[in-house]
Length: 426
Ligand SMILES: *Cc1c(COP(=O)(O)O)cnc(C)c1O
Image: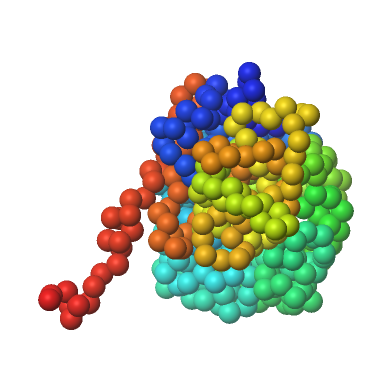
């Protein structure tokens, strides 16, 4: 459920006609509904409070999905923790008011500097993805006179049945410690002075629309925890990652209640506290991208609708063949004729499209479109390719909105570069 809907045939974000935002802020622009962010967080946290009874459940928002400070601060006020994957994200989380003890640090390539920053911040746990990383953290922690709480991210080698570029839990993916090495890795960790293995971690992929891959992976993890306990490595915590999918085009992903019940069924007997790292689920359907039609070009076989948003603003269609619903701000009559068109941006790349062969009502220059479900992996993946300034972001709350990232100016964009001395004069 989200808070973007037609009222009197005009698309609204909560109580604001989005045409007003398009007019006042300009397009392209990302628009987030605060009520949807809040609602998704509450539905997810209530699911675990009601259906996971074996221990405590902590929700660490996977910030890489949308790391605008206003989005993080919204979740921070609701009590969320954060899953971070870089020092930049760590500092963003702290700046938004998430305390260190609610932060977990994931990612395959943490540097010494990042490890030290996270130890300084007193984070809850490092999710370690290789033996060299484990050894380095041990050294860094010892040098600082600390003991780092860790989890080993294991790769359970299960097929998440999602797009290949967002599957992370098969042995051919770079993520996690190979399943057959995981027991040995825990033995090594248990013998180290600078780390304390307290948890097991996994994350098998993103946009999963079926519980079965999760169930398979979590069952394997349960077995590993029992083996570890038999060896005297007393694991009382498990981090289950994120990955629960959202509807983009009529998919029916499992409800968080069913996800929580399944976790209770597969892991409840172990009595562990758990950490969950939802990203997309919390923010995906809380955002839209507004874009204006610049031209409609007739082709021989099909028409091209050229809009002012491009792959540098939203790369998901290009990168993941992702489907985003695209709707006009004025609702088209159900009976209005629709023709398949390509909706493309101005960037000089054949892959620059938002939709291909998409049936749309008749569109003309100046019409504004909303690209739906763009709150996750949208603005965070934007770039300035073709010297297009970074797209602005707006958050709506009831009948008000605030610009939460202004549009970058072309002057600012140029000023990021520095001429070497020999090019400065003359
Ligand atoms: C990306 C990621 C997540 C979030 O995934 P979603 O599909 O957005 O829920 C959680 N944990 C880790 C380790 C990740 O890399």
